[in-house]
Each structure stands twice: as structure tokens, then as C-alpha cells.
Image (tube, rainbow, N blue to C red):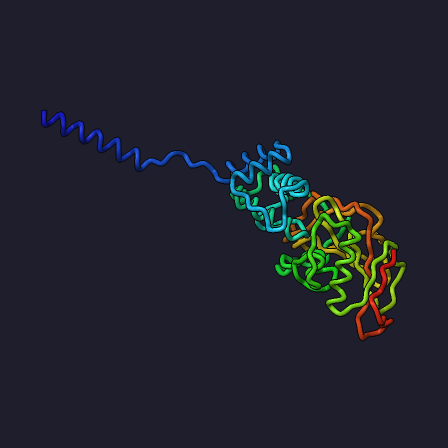
Length: 293
């Protein structure tokens, strides 16, 4: 009897040892996340936001559970699934949209890029702009607005003048905030919807346009025909056309020498803000310049 008990004990010990020592087959975190994302992209905007909120999504302060946020969440999840938006590459200018994308990436496990998405990204050729110069890590830290007005921070219009910004604003209001910021930074300026044919040597010009979930800025030289821009935290680029109004703008971009296809279009009226230094060459108004339409 003792021999039987001893033999049984040895068998049980062997079984337990192998049960503990041999792990179950590992499941790729990236694969699980990508499958989940593919399922999420099938949901409508309302159900998608509700699902993400139930799973711990934190909305940035200032974003409400409204139509803009629901549509923005849908776009961000689609961009993540396509491999356009990643933990390293977030292609948006609006700071709250950037924060929203970061929060979605956190709860989705910051998935890697699928082979299908990587192939699409790797093969993309820029359509409307040409990269200027070599990549710099500093590009990650300022957006189109910081680039356009020459103040290299990742902020929205209104930041420098202490005014609040919302993408529910019309593009005309965004132009007004830009004029206010330039005033705070030491410039006279005004907005207009008429593209300048050329500028005085002391003048500068930026252009702004709005899409459904983001905005974008360009800046021009004194000739009025050479325009450059910087989509989000990506490389600066030269617009391939002599006029910003030649066609619809997009957020196609280049990050660390990899080109990314557009996911957003900017279709609003274009506003131009013409400005020049206070106490420098050019007219010195005694009161605020009235905007030109």
C-alpha cells in the first residue's frame, strides 16, 4: 500500500511540475489590439465612443460628449487601424485632438502597425507638397501654427493672447485669434479672404483653413507665390502650387523620412493674415486695424 501511495505521489508531483512549468501559448498583444481595432472601426460613432468610455477612455478637458468628439473618435480609431496614427506619429494640429488620440492609444495597447498598413505607408508618395531638408527631432514639438507664425510651440490659436480656442469656431474666428496672438507677440495685423499678389518687404503672411476635425496653417513669402507649411509634428514642406487656393488642403505628411497619406481635408474658406512688426518699418496704426474681408 505504501508503494502505491508513493508511486501516486510521484505521478502527481510530475504532473503539477509540468503544469506550472509549461506556459500556455503566448498571445501577441499587438495582434489582439489590431483585431479589437478592426472590430471597433465597424461601430458607428455613437457606439464607438460609448464603448471606449466604458473601457476607460478619458476625454481631454474641454471636449464634450458631442457630435465633434464622436466624429473625431471615429477618425482617430480609423487612423490607428490604418497605421497612420501611432504612439510616435500623431498627425493632428489641434492640441485636444492630439490628446484624444494619445488617450485612445493608451487603452488600445498602443498597437503596432499591421503588415497591410505598413505596406501602404511605405509605398506612399507625397501628392501636393515636397519635404524641405532633412528630418530633425525638434519637428515633433511644434505644429503648423507654431511654424507659420515663427513661434515654435505646439499650441492652438489664442494661446499667446490668453483666449480660448474651440474647433466649433468658424475659420473667420480662428483668423481673429491669430491676429490677437500676433498683437500680443508684437505685430500689427489684419485678416482678409483675398490672397495678396505680393507683399512689402516688411510684411509677412499666413493662411488658415479648417476641416471637420482639425485646422491647418501655411505661410508665404513676399512674392505671394511660395508657400510652406508643417503638418503637426512632421517635417516642413513646400506647397507645390503658387496659390494656397489652387486645391483642397490635406494633412499628408512626412515623419522621420516616411511619408503618410492624408486622412483629413481642409475645405473651408481660406483666410490670409497679413502682419508686420510694431515699432518697425511700415505703418504704425494708433488703434487696432479693422479686418478686411
